[in-house]
Image (cartoon, rainbow, N blue to C red; front, top):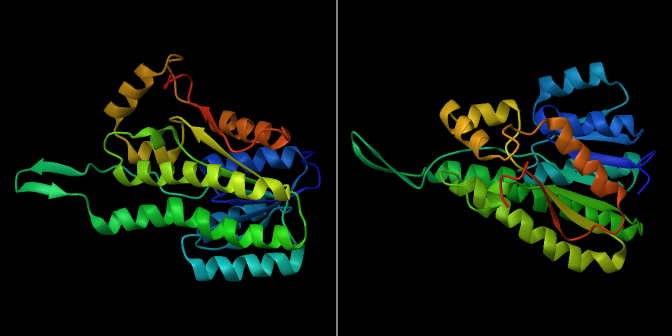
Length: 249
């Protein structure tokens, strides 16, 4: 796919990996719209990049997604690319022993993580693909997964959500490929973002870095470049592209 002039929606594009993807797409001269819950961040992004269309939307809320995508389609028509990047990086073990006894994983947090990391992908893709099909747009869906989909200790909800994202990627690639719509996933390893530092202790990060053969965390721009590469390769479909510095080999 030639990205110049292509319409791209990036969810969670205000900061972290999403913002790096937005910057890389700007360099490719794509027409970008960011869906994000962070109103202040959207304001800052709009001021810094006036060419980026900003939409305040909680993509874990189906009604908000329907309204936001409907407005988008009325203004821009079908998008060419959807990047499902929005989500929560969260760590909590299934059970833990404390001074007061055994504490179980909070079910409310479980539901919140699944809604943000898995339901949002289903909601956005459903609404976007419906328009692609009716307009016969040969588009691309990129789902941002994680190497944690393989099962990372202390991340029950996050790992389950990302494993679900990988499964949806395979299912949708088979369903939508005959209609000219590619569906792919990019699975970063641990990267140098604020969300990584907020979710993991310094000790865990040091140990993780030690296990990476390159002995460092990934850079957001490296993940963004990976997204660009699979977008531009029209034969990449239905697969998970892992970018983890060799952490899982």
